[in-house]
Every structure is written in structure tokens, then in C-alpha cells.
Amino acid sequence: MGTYRLAEHFVSINGEGRLAGELALFLRFTGCNLRCDWCDTMWANEKEAPFTAATDSDLVEIAKQAIAAYGIKNVTLTGGEPLLQEELAILCGKLSALGLNTEIETNGSVPVEGFLGRCEENGCRPSLTMDYKLPSSGMEQKMCTENLSLLNDTDTLKFVCGSINDLDRAAEILEKFRPECAVYLSPVFGRIEPAEMVEFMKKRKLGKVRLQLQLHKIIWDPMERGV
Image 1: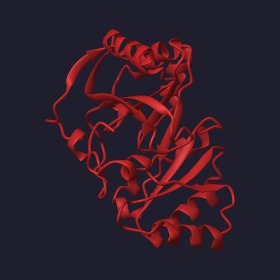
Image 2: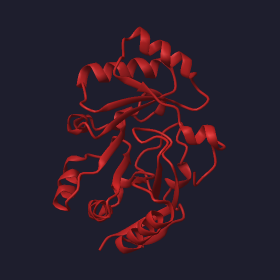
Image 3: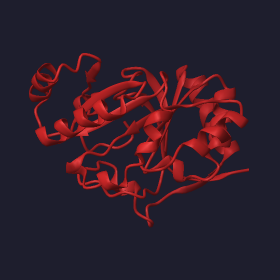
Image 4: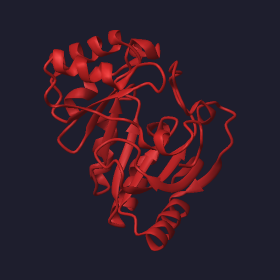
């Protein structure tokens, strides 16, 4: 039985991605191997971040309660970096067995091939929402580009952009790797105007790429937790 470093759990809407606007249970875990310049969950990344040691059974019970109380169909495993939780594949199998669409938000630096293999052994294939960290993050050198070929049509590749330079780099990565998944461009809140990004998409003919705004930062205060 796995034990997980649970920072918080809550039910809210998905703020971004394919299921934006739909209710989901969020399970946030502590710990991250990156330190992005614009990170908005740094509080959960530090070694001393407060957490509750939760078992598979604990988290399945939280999910059952969320299903009963809110009728949720989705669960998002996030962080920090959730793939640092050693038994996450086991948890994914148990959440999927409840009938939940299981999504993992991962930072793009952790190899996913072995993890996906373990998930299949546990009877599931969660969807991945994977970042590619662009230059303004300060973490691009940590990216595991081998992951890009493993993304399929249930997955999402996300580029968080803080500048036109970031957008140029995102376009280069798409041209080089041609990932077979949904692709989203998302602005760093307060650093680049979405209108600039739309003009860039038009200029570079990015007809299959979507611009996404983080709904939770529009609806609530951008620094508010648990939403």
C-alpha cells in the first residue's frame, strides 16, 4: 500500500486544459524537482511543506465522498510534481476503478515511460497534462524531451509563456517534435497579454494550437488556494 504526501484536497472546476470548466477533485502532493521562476504553487514544493501522510485507502475514500457529494467525474493529481510519489500508478488504478477520469499534471522533467507501463499493469492509462518549460521558467534544460513521443490523443502538452521569446521557442518545439496530442499556450499571469499570443498564433499559423486562460485566476484571487 502506498503512502502519499498530501498537501491539500478540494473540489473545484478545472481551471485549464481539455476539461476546463468541469468539476474535479484535486489531490495536491508536496515536493517538486524544479524551481520555475513563475511558479504559483511554490508553497507546496519545499521539503518542509506541510502534508498529511495519506494511504491509497484514504485517498479513495476522499474520492468516494467527492463523488457522493458533488457528482464529480474527474480527478486531477497535481503538485508539486505528482510523479515523485512512488506508488502513484497504484493510486491511478484505484481511482480509475471508481469510474473517474484520472488526469496527472506533470512538469515535463520526469520520464513517464516506466510510469505509464506500471499504470497499464494496474488497469488504467491516466491522461497526462504535461508542461514544456520555456526559457522564462529557468528550467528548460531539465526537460525530458523523450516524453513528447509518448503523448497520445488523450494527453495535453502545455506551454506556459511569459514572453514572445517563449512563444518562439514553443513553436520551435512543436515543429521539431510534432506531438500527437492537444497543445495549449497559456500566459504567465501578468507577464504577457493574451492578445499578443493570439497575434503570434496567427502569424505562425498555429491552427491546431489553443490559447487557454486559467479560469480559476479569473474567478478567484490569483493567489487563493483550494480553488
